[in-house]
Length: 332
Image (tube, rainbow, N blue to C red; front, side):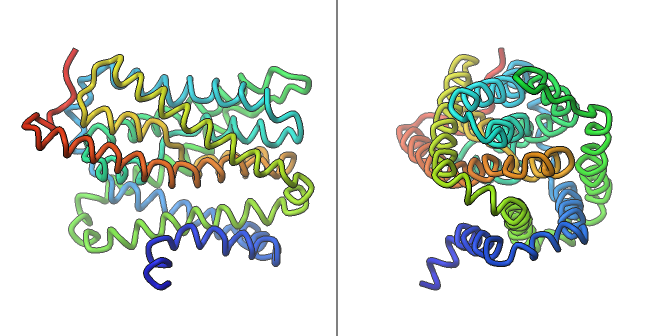
């Protein structure tokens, strides 16, 4: 049992915080009211800046087709597919379709995608490249895409684009930039704490789940089986996006290592930035709108572990056959 808990502690943690949220919703309210989660998220992005080694991605910047494909897939195709599929399936409550859009416009994960790429024996510098550029671009694209999509429908929603842009810059870009500035001076000192930082990032996700669920317990109970439908939808959506990105990687003729990096990392989404958007602009009117994001995060955590091991098996077979399994991304 101890070994099981150690290996799957994060998923056990999700069950625990959901239970706490339903039994003691005041805990989640306390975390939000006293800005504990805001501070923790700031520290999380500061740590991201401290630990993100961008030196190895310089060579990838020459590859325009990979940059274009990653940005278009993650920040354009994903939200379009997700939002319109969600609108076809989720008539009520509107929180669910809006929540799918919020996770759809979010950038790729920062740590998880790179870890999964490493497990898959993929091109880690390319994974970092997708991560850094996607997150930088999303600061600009999120407000405009949300505002554009939500203009359509029976009840158009107009968002304060400039305010959202400013908020995302302060809460995401500033702490990450501070961390990058400090990294040359602290990278050796923080090196032994890499595992602790990873756990800290997972704890941030658990706090986000606690806050989101405790803020909408009544609505979740009212939704009932619709929540199961959200998870089924997210499983289908993630399979679809994985297939799309695998197809794109073949279309732009990436090698095996780059294909696994592109397929996995471009298909993942960060819950942290989704939370920042939801908490700042949607939580009051659409308290359940973070539920799809939580469902997608859980889905990608489980499915991409399996996908990464599948890619790893293929890479090892290819390597043993005498082929070059670790060559860089091919040039156009």
